[in-house]
Image (cartoon, rainbow, N blue to C red):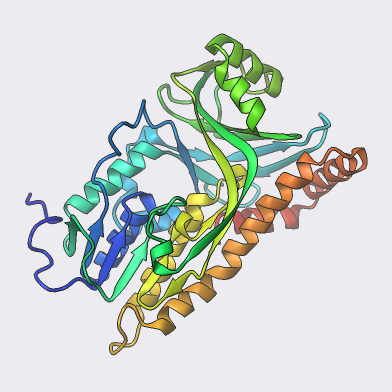
Length: 381
């Protein structure tokens, strides 16, 4: 089969230039090309040189994100072992008793989320781009009616378009690792709010079906440095202590990685003929696992708006970009406020705040309609 991207697919000037070849940028290129727009894609076709070790990131994807990936013919291309259904979720407070539980069965859903191997998703997106008509990789910026900036939170060109990202560091690091567990995960995602840290274990079917976990552990910088310096056996012991053995005996599978956490939102989000997408536009704490979901929702929004535009409007029309910004404002602002509020609530040292937050967690667990509402909001429904 001939490779379309990089051929003469764009004999005419492109309608859209996508800057960025992460998951959001590739998804945007594919979604717009499927709607008949001519897309130029700028960015590296492979991981940046010097990147050390395997990619141990994992994404928690909601139904809206899965629907978009299905639409652009990527979802089914991800190996089955690299995408694991979450059927239940258990969130524990820091008093040893407060618990909030969610169940797909109780919410009449097939699943609460999917945990997806980041490298597998990136590979499936890149392969789809290789054979997509109307997409051409370009070595340098080209003129287009609309430029989409999807270069991530550290975008190097955002400022050149007049946008500024106001970011507030949390003073926390996210430690990621892959684990094997002695106990089957049974599609259960676990999370512990252990002031001041937040620990999540996400079910994975790699490398052994039913016994893999992805770790995301948000801890203060000093504590993160100490944990990363530990030998594997000592780190495993810290995990067992933090989880009280609830997820079984945990064993590291390879290296650990860490990155600094912050919250931020760019202003403005769009201008004459350009628009920010994904982490280039907004950054949230990963405790709710919604970062990539917000980015893919950005893609779905602009793709729909451009597909439904009046024939005489250019893809970079200011009214279209403003319409997209209005549609996405509530979702992104609410998620930023939610994650920021939860992190500060569960890191507050006051005993009465601790009592309040744990009582609140237990109360929500008793209100079935509220739990259903929260579940469907997280799923993007």
